[in-house]
Amino acid sequence: FFFSGFKILSRSQTSREMELEEDGFVVVPTSGKASRARPTVQPDPVDVPERVRSVGISPENWPTYFDGDGRIVRESALRKAIFQGGVAPEVRKEVWKYLFGFYPFHATNLEREIIRKEKRVEYNALKAHWRQVLEPSASSPFEMNFDLEEEDPQMIFMKMQADCNARRTKIDEDAARKYIRVIKKDVPRTDRHVAYYSGDDNIHLNWLQDILVTYAVYHPEMGYAQGMNDVLSMLLCVLDDEAEAYFCFCGYMNAVRDNFLESGMQASLDQVKEILGRTDRELQQHLAAIDCADLVFCHRWMLLSFKREFSFTDALCLFEILSSHHLELSSGTAHAVRQQEKRVTLERNDGAVEGASGEDVWAHHEYKFECFICLAILRMYRGSFMRCTETPALYSLANSLVESMHLDSVLGVAEALFFDYCRQSVHH
Image 1 (cartoon, one colour):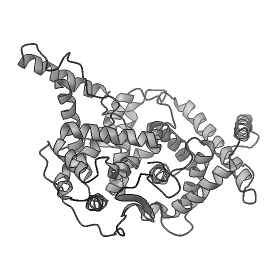
Image 2: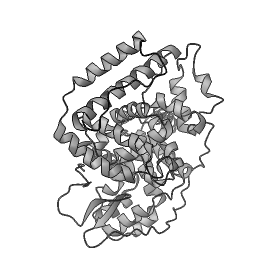
Image 3: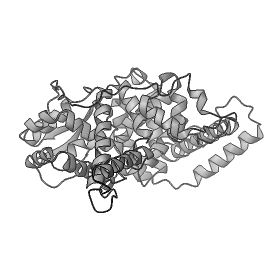
Image 4: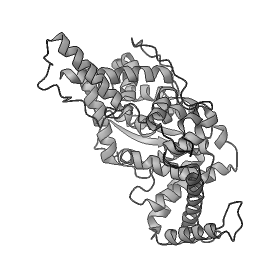
């Protein structure tokens, strides 16, 4: 699963390999060429309660989450509201600045203004430094972009400090230039169907490129991996600000960095495989029989937060829902469901809980809601997956699901599977 250039997965010799096509991740069976045709696949009927999306965060209720000084004092309620109903486009930009760490939840109005200025100056200094080192002929002096007088003492200090900190970083020029070559190939084909990135000489593509290079240069332990451009694209499109998108991207990567490492993605796929084995043994055995037990075809789903499986609008909503981290196995909601199931079981069995101690012996708290989104897709298209009799057919099916799913339906099934798992964990 290690990213290296355009190669996505490095595996021992098997019946398949993964490569990148111009417009994204595509499977290329070793026996032939991949087809661009994406036949319509209908989901199986799944008997779960219909999910009704609540209001979420709207222009009307967004101010109610702040106190008089501008601090968010209802963080858990905010995260729950995002999970249940998403964020209205009118306030999404401001909400995402908190969700992805640009602002601390406890920052006051005054503190946020200072943070905004400091981070903008910091980003400008970081970008100016790598340009001077890597592109000296194209670089320009570090300039301020604020509507403040140049002699403002606070601004002068911010600039000097940021410039000093940036220059302290030793840039690995060989590695950086390698990343730049790949980034310059990836960026021009990123979400060009979206109006924000369409057209010739689009400045937003320049922003996208510069953010990715800045991140790769100053985070050498991560560098650049394909897929980062797709994630950043959503952030930049919403925030519409280069510096803010950079720091929100850093915040997001701090939370999910393991997904871009071989060990981390393998662990995520193993978690899906573990839950699938406990909830649908027949499907797991079928996938094993056609050499797909490793669930590598789920790789893109989780890496890109299922961006390719939904319309861009729905992908933005799912991205914020997953990033709310409201419904996790370690959350209070999950704990309440397990405790309720224990009480019901105690009443049914005259005080005895099935299993040794009543502990959640296989409710692994590190499992993320993304795992249950994967399971929901497998469940909703179970019949189609079961009809696949060879590996290329299964990968063709997985590719045919691009931009074909209904978000509320998938979320409804995922939530049902999540709560079923919580309840079942009491009895094993």
